[in-house]
Image 1 (cartoon, rainbow, N blue to C red):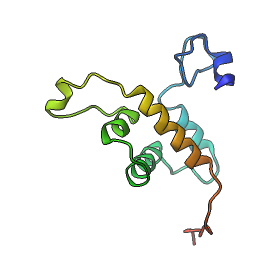
Image 2: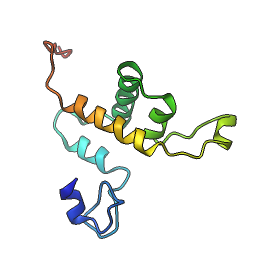
Image 3: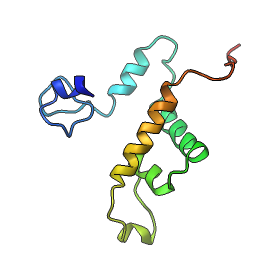
Image 4: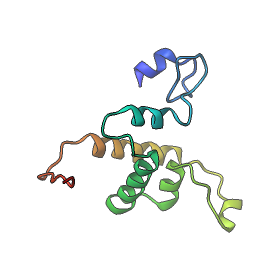
Length: 114
């Protein structure tokens, strides 16, 4: 995060680009993934899907917090009354995800490739 702040003019940009006051484009991660050998056919949607599945199966966070973390809009009558961004809860959820995603596997990992 400190490295990101050094090239960002504002603390509000989480993923700054090399240009002042500008964040990375919405396809920057996809392009990086496509340039990685062996991952050319992957999509960013798979990462989002993996996160949502993990969050629902392995955590106790409320569904609305998980949906907010994915920037999904609340549907139904609730959307008219819900005014929170769940900022503090999303921070805790992202910390839990970071710990999970960067942890060493605890069991033997079996390759699914032939």
